[in-house]
Image 1 (tube, rainbow, N blue to C red):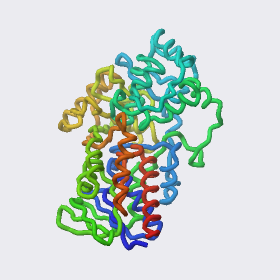
Image 2: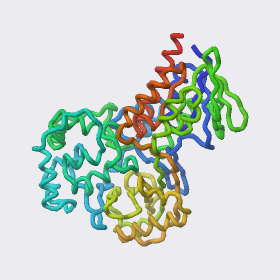
Image 3: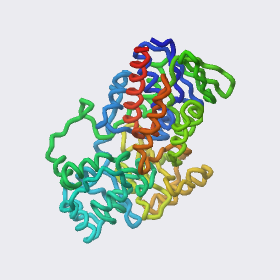
Image 4: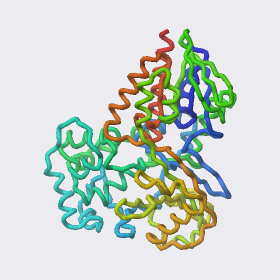
Length: 465
């Protein structure tokens, strides 16, 4: 059994990998270039407000997140979305329109709702319903999400309904995102059931089961914000094993199979194995000497920049302006604002009594500029678009901007094959593995599951030496 594993990168993937190693009794040195852990998973607490700077929740239907919370002893702090928070809206012709109820596989199964919705005109509704009769494509070839959705449900349903829900997850361009790497279940649904409507009807008839084993709402968080899971992971790893402001600059492999990492400030860390949980670019830099083919492919993975703006208001100023838990904005609407979450409606306790907390998003593929503007300009953009859509013009009590520069990997067409080639190339270097959002899923549960599996696989290989 090794004496030490070096984990490079202290985001949620690096934390999950390090916790898994510690659970196995392995010593760990976790190196993080910034001054805090968690990456985009970051919670600030101010004057009774709980502000999530990056993601504010994760899917309960994917077991990785809830299982990790259970392993860390914080499962009892999980909270679901507020039952009285209202629904989700889509901006259409500069006004908020309710998302039709009964959305399954991105297609409404309650057809009366879609027939009554102004999101689609009559030809658009008929074209969406025609999915029931369109034969499935049996090819295993990859294709853009946009092409897939237009083929199944038509241009209007794609632009007004599917695109803002799909690409919002990646801050990406659905015309470039890979269906096999981002939404493989849609392709599986088409091939298994013959179409999306047929699949949605089958899902509606099937019994509902929670993989997490509990009765959770689809999206969950923690009472004190998503940062709870980062803090719990850090405690489990141990403060003495975590090295902040420690950027790995070079990776040296020893003749005995071990490694040394040299940092920007000249420190040297030795270990029997290395887990790289850094974004694709820094990972490529560290792998250049050891797996040049992997480094080249890693540099081909694009990233997108975005920003969130959290604003606090008096509840009375926003009561008539808030639309449920939030809304998403299709590209065709022409706004810089991409989405809004009413944080204090989504989860209880996010704002003090008599106050409201709102979060706006800017920056996505094709329009990243707002994420790089000064704070006052970003706030101005969010307030301008918010006023145009909701009529809200009240002055916020405070506003905080959080930027995520080059933080969201883009799974373009061919991403699955690219990742397979990267992993093959790295597999030729014993005791060295990679994990993170650049490979098998950007969501928190996906990152945790992949990092846990990678760490356990590494341990198996080390034990067999």
